[in-house]
Image (cartoon, rainbow, N blue to C red; front, side, top):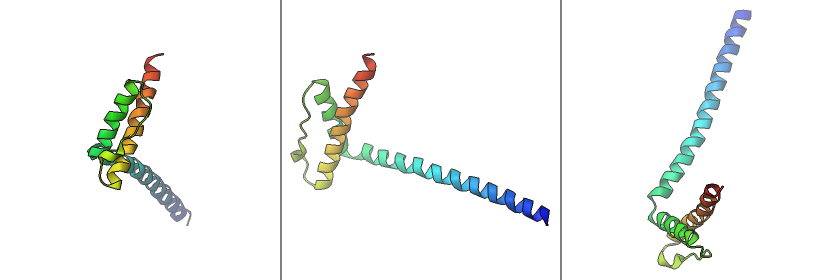
Length: 97
């Protein structure tokens, strides 16, 4: 009976470890998939570029969402602009030190 318990415990430990590893990999894949979607979206890339330019020129953030027709595109442009604007300041702060 003790051999059966030992095998059961070993099986449960292996199965639990596999389940935890599979769960952590799912989060990494989901994050990569979101980033890939952003990289493929023209409105996001446009906002990212214009946000970086505005930050490099020292301009205050002005998001021109009127250049995009749909609400989805406007939201993606805004998200890209914010990321580009914020990243430009973050990158600049680390290179000055």
